[in-house]
Image (cartoon, rainbow, N blue to C red; front, side, top):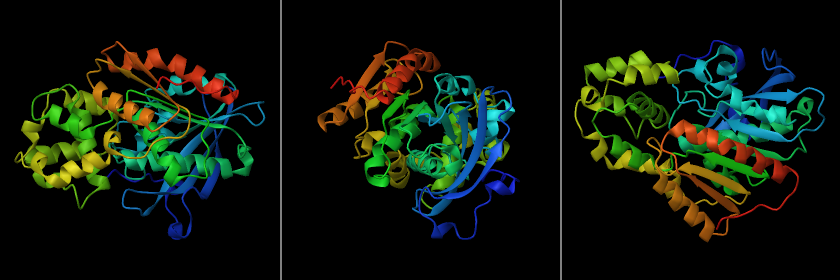
Length: 366
């Protein structure tokens, strides 16, 4: 079950999309930035790539600080965690749905431009981490090509937390091979879901307060891998109803309606987690198992006792990156609550970005 397509023709893929290269601009438009005072805004549609290496249309929203020439650029991967197109930043920045809209605007206060991509792609494939990394990189490529924005020579940082942290971390790891033409001055990511397989096995069939988001991630992955991950075939009547009920839902709706539900109520059988193909897809979207190593200056932070995204996989990724010579700084936080760790880490993260924009050498904890 796919999301209802956005009715705005700006979101429609052109017939010649395959003739374009990843990061090529399809169309642009100037927008009213509403209550984001001191900014002017643009939206950029661009060519990107999905997990089957097929061309797809991407979208990002750019806010420029008024009166600042040639500002640095931050690509901020927001907290989407949703299945509906109206939940993507190009819509949710302006309809009140985006949970971290205020935090996303902090770079504007420092005189930086910000790009907020719809990194889940045109089908809102929540959970498709590799896709989100490619979408992020192509959004930056496209933004730098739009002459009206004046960002062609701007230094670039990418940033995000939780699902946005996953997209950011994947973009950093993919960049050396997928976008070697793109130089990143800084990468900051926290609360990273680095092992989707571990998270799925830990959730199991028991009740869990995050079940709504876990179900949404399963549906998002099915959208991205329909032939390899036919999860709907494993749902009972109740599960198919819940899939229909949530196919356009945003984060708060999913959390509220998932809190008293669990996989036991939705599944026709427990065979899915015994499927080698399901495990393969989960691993292909888990940073823990991806061999790529970022070359850009990188800061990760993670709660040691985070109840939603586990610490150990991130620590393992950090150790591997360090052994490979990545310029990485890792900051664990002795915090359990997921969003508290976001607040605790972002102050240092933005200062880290600012230091890289000034040209200061990147510190390392390796």
